Length: 397
Image 1 (cartoon, rainbow, N blue to C red):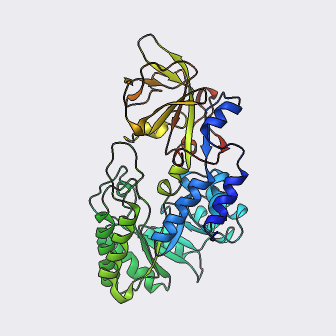
Image 2 (image 1 turned 90 degrees about the vertical axis):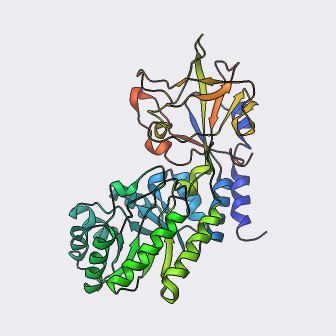
Image 3 (image 1 turned 60 degrees about the vertical axis):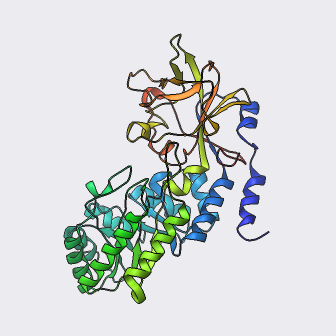
């Protein structure tokens, strides 16, 4: 058994439940529950490490659940992309020696000072001269500053460039100034969540090489961001290997002998497949509409923001009666409402479910390890936060 297999098998042996079916059979189910598989996450980490020639940093915003964080730490992930003082505190208090990259470029002076002086953060992203002045004011000699830049176009579910990033000319000016100030200078970009085209990384890397050349500054590091996509239903995507190969080729092509050290900061792509959300049907209307015990105020909030077709399975007691990945025979396009007393608590896209679905059946949504519990509210006092470890998760069964 090699070093990669050992933590996977250890996680497998420590789980109380073998799979979803056994959890349903042995548990008392009321609130929705997140079924987390260490094995699935460890296998995904191993895949990233095998394919990416650089440092792997986890974007904590995707899911700060401690079960996931502990699993990542045990797998050798020691670097974290943090977006707030709260996330910095969580990581530094839990993991001694963790590396925090404060890559949210919009921070108050107090936030920057607290991160640096109270928590020892030495890696910051900026996207304007004000941000650079803020870092300079810290008076520290060992700070890495990553200038975040953007392009004018994107092909992703979320356009991060609408909120963050300097344009090419601005980034060149900021990088030039940072170099003059004697900082460790890096560049960073984010092509957008669920980036559907690997050539977007190539275009950003090409732009990074131009910025570096025009600023006369050799980069300490190039952060290629996150954005690597998950295979939601009705999507056609290149493999993770193809994305990583495109990145490596682009760096060699455009930087040559001056190629910087690489860093990536996946969130969704790293933890998404590790967890499913198990919900229960609490009412079936005569017209076929159904109500479940979670919704857009809970773990399914992202469904309101972007069209991501979640794979799902339906269980009747511990028997699997439907798997959307295997086809939609004997199914009906169904309106699904959440449990709250609000009419907008409804999945925006109807989903195909068995035509005979009934109260008490379970609907399990896959690819819920990111932006599920992390964005859930407590509206109407409904909760969507409980995690249970199982050996074989949705993606492993």
